[in-house]
Image (tube, rainbow over all chains, first blue to last red):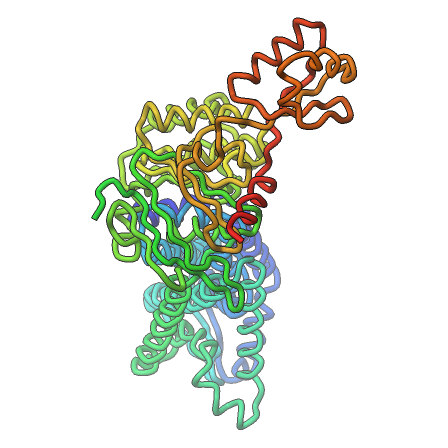
Length: 279
Length: 306
């Protein structure tokens, strides 16, 4: 199995498209950080505008933590697209290339093939988020330094002390890996269904966008179905910036994300197992 | 159980909705056979091969390979099979060597660099082993397809139209390789083709299928009556050639003479004799072509059956 995962990772990283995500992050994060270095104080002013008459804000609020927190907010739409580029190609790409015929006529089970591809997809997702974390926090540290983190969430402004931040980011990035794991799993499921990688990319993005729109519109009927949309749990990472932590909600959301990953993988495996290879 | 039976297909069928791609097919391949699997395009050959290597699931019937059912012993059986299924597709962004290295890692055997280079040499690709497969011609991919099928030294080699897209020299080399694998390496070979002549040259047993069903199965020599062969001689001066033959026994074997082509029904050893006779009498022979086509033979078979 380890051998198969290695092979899948090798194939992923031999494809040009796999680097689009890394390049996008390597370009976008510095651009955002440079821009915020120049104009970030406006964001801080915006967040604290109602409090400035009552409180005096001192210290370096425009720091690596603040910028990294803002960048994490891009997870919902932008990073999923980068992930589907690879995850949507994992099975469908073999079908398009006709290489299923090479892989599946070897003495390895279909379950091993599908599992190794899925795990490779999750590792890719992890690496993409890791790069996001390293670039956001690392480059931010060099450009903006550290300080307290000011967060505006659910109408509440919270300021975190310097020594109370890193563990929150670590857990937030772990949670982000899970959220993006659901996206990768969904693209993987579509990848098992079709013979061309474009379909899974478009379908996954369409579902995410539709679910996000439904979640955002304040209509009773939409609000009632929100708990059943996986996109409602994609922001679980931000719960690590609540004070106090709502542990029950975090555990619940994490379990829901894990259940989605397991369910989508299970379905993809079943489809792949039953699939007649005609390409 | 017949221990010499390598493949045993019983009442095999595959339906795609209303289409019966394979219909109640039965066949046996024995150890050491070069088994010709013949049929026109769309006859169900590739569907049968896909079922044989578990790419698709049969709707009905059973497949036994090396005495074990494919359904229950898939991994064990695939470890002993090397196959080319339809056109040769590879990871185009990787080199031939890397493609084989990856396939070697999942072949169930330890495949080292030496073995990879050995099979690449066998198919004549050793000088291009570092090139990305996307830069290969169709013929080179076909050879690489053969290399991957032989990589893990399988007991049974399944070749689906292995000479498609090759030039005459390439076709001959593949045929020679099949004979070498059969005679020298004692491999069992399942050769799918729609070219009867190709099968006739290398196979000892064959089956002809059409519309998913077997039409005839048996020994190649007996089925094709290989004692005689229909041959076209392309000559520069047909009238002079005809008048030359008029006073000889050859004229009785001449079937048709049209457009510079003389078509004879000859015994195998007579082909070279006639060629020599014509050349010695200053008749230039441009080509000697066996003209029995699968369609012609197939029509005969189906007419006999009906």
